Length: 238
Image (tube, rainbow, N blue to C red; front, side, top):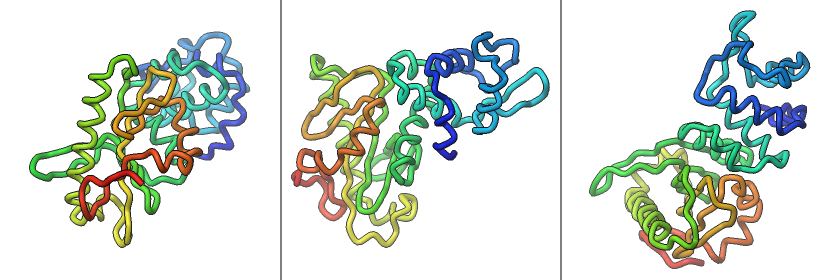
């Protein structure tokens, strides 16, 4: 979707009201919409942006990726992340993360499955030469005061990424990075419910609403990040 089309939406409260109405739904009746967002101009803008599709005079269909787009726009306009992201299902939360990554020109793969000594799955792979983010998505929050869950989540993700690194050559076609001479794999957790970037074992735990900022600042974080190199398994950080 052309992100410029989302610029016409300037009222975050209207977007949040719509997200609450369409929560868990793919088709809604026009009568379900609050009066505040039945404005013809607002509805026309939604249709023009591809965020709704009229089925008939009474019903609207919501495309699969529309909720993530709307959630991102609401947060950009200043809505607190918790009420916005709580309207998303698990898959839609992953799509929200993918939407941010697409804006930074990453190729995104959902639910990347591979086999090493056993079967593994990484929620989201984001690749842009020579960087590959291996992302574990958490709809719940991991607080710095809860060291054990944070440590466990990071170590589990490191295990997945190391297994992928050990089998990297066999996975290059699926990863859409065939022919790369070098690749840097970065374990990353993205969560819903906390406010600040946390760290464990030099792996960042990034709030979904701050993912865009994290990606913009990625070069500044490079000396803090844990890198796994495909040729040698776990590596020291730069």
